[in-house]
Each structure stands twice: as C-alpha cells, then as structure tokens.
Image (tube, rainbow, N blue to C red):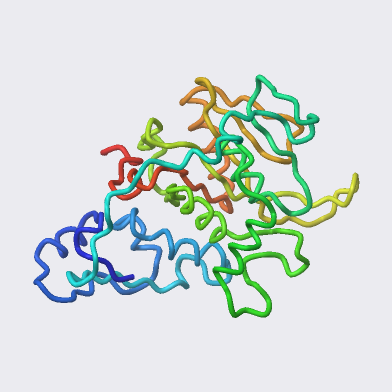
Amino acid sequence: MTKAPQSFRLEGRLREQLAVAGGGRTVLYEGPLRPLCPLAPNNVNAMVAAAVAAPCLGFDGVRACLVADPRQPTPPPTRGPCQGPPSHRHRRHHRRGGGCPSAGPYHERQRLELCAVHALNNVLQRPCFTREAADEICKRLAPDARLNPHRSLLGTGNYDVNVIMAALQSLELAAVWWDKRRSLERLALGQILGFILNVPSNVSLGFVALPLRRKHWLAVRQIRGTYYNLDSKLRAPVAIGGEVELRAFLRDFLSQGLCEVFLVVPRAVEETGAWLSPE
C-alpha cells in the first residue's frame, strides 16, 4: 500500500519512522500483517479483508507493505454519509411484515445466503442494497474472473468482506476492522454508526440442522438509545441494552475466536481515527 505521508495514521515506532522520513519514497513496513495491525489501525483495512477472505492465509500468511510517497495525491475532504433515495429515507418495516410501517427497527429476515445484504440493510436501517447490487459489486471487484471469488459459485449469495466494504464505500461509509487485542472500552461509540460481525453459524436444511458451520454476517445498531442485535436469522430484532451491555455482547462473540468485528463509520471518521478513544 502506497499513500501520501499525510494519509497515514500510525502508532509507535512507525509514527516515529514516518516523522523522520525524508522527502522521497520510504518503505515504512514490510512483513506479516498481524504485527502491523496495532501500529497502523486506520491503514490496514484492505489487507485485513484479504486475510479474512482467505482463512488459509490468515493474518500471519498475508504479507503487508506500507510505503510513504509524497508524490501520491492527498485525499480530498469527505462528505457526510449518503442518506439514500428519498423514498427509502424513512421506511421502517420488517421484510416479512407485509410492507406495513413498524415502530420497531428495520429488520430483514434471512433468505438464501444473502446475510451480507441483510446485514448491510439492517445496519443502515433501510433497504439500500439488493442481491443484484451485490452481484454487480462482485463483477466490479473481479471483472475478468470466470468464477467470481467474492460470492457463492451457486449464485445464492455468500458474499465476502470485500463486497461489504465496497458497498459501504459507495455511501461514503467505511468498515473498520476491530483488532480484538484492543480493549472494547476504547470504542468511541458516539462516532460509530453500527457494527457488522462475521461469526460461525450452524447450517440447516429446512428444519433439519446439519453438522456443518459456516461464516455468517449480522448487524448491530443503536436505535433510540438501545443497541439491537439485527441478525437476519432471528425472527425479530433482539434488544442488547446500553453501552455496557453492548461491550459485553461484543466481548462474548470475540471470545469465540473465529469472530471478526467491523465498525461502520463515516469516511471522515475512518480517516481521522475518531472511532478509537485515546488510551
């Protein structure tokens, strides 16, 4: 990854290394991804996406490289997140509730392997993305691939993290990977729109549970002062509670080991690192 020096938000020795870098191209880091994550939490999202999408590589198998180059353009100031089409702006209903307005949170129920689409819409609290839109993102991510690596070969969904990140970027939002070695007390919850989790989930065929587990996307968001679990496999949203209960909820999932948490934030918050409170 090559960026203008002003685009990096670094910690520890990398911050010091960037401060003394000369006016030319400087390699700040080259090596495994895992040690880089706490040193450059705002600049590793794309590489984290590769590690999550390719579990056979993981955080130790993915090689990372950060290069500061003053010839690279500095990103322009970002706008606030898009509010979506006017017709969607105030719609709150359950997907299987007949389309009638509801006083509760917007909640899409699971269909096929579209949990990534449901998680996006549930965290945004409006029907912003469709299966067709997600398929189009997959084509843009791998335009020359005969077998698209970002979705199921069967065409039933099962979209990977790259699709979620690209979808949010189209709305001037970002998915920031949460390094589970950090204390959850450092979450600046006032800067975070919501959460998308990738968790192991049981597979069923109709009413029959199969001895298989696959990764599943789910959304969490605060609505009128209460955080809700908006998992599309639930019959209805489940209230989590306030900030203390949210941190306990996330801590429980992260303790399972195979869970990944992404913070959904405005692009400006991602770039300034405002989602993370000082130690």
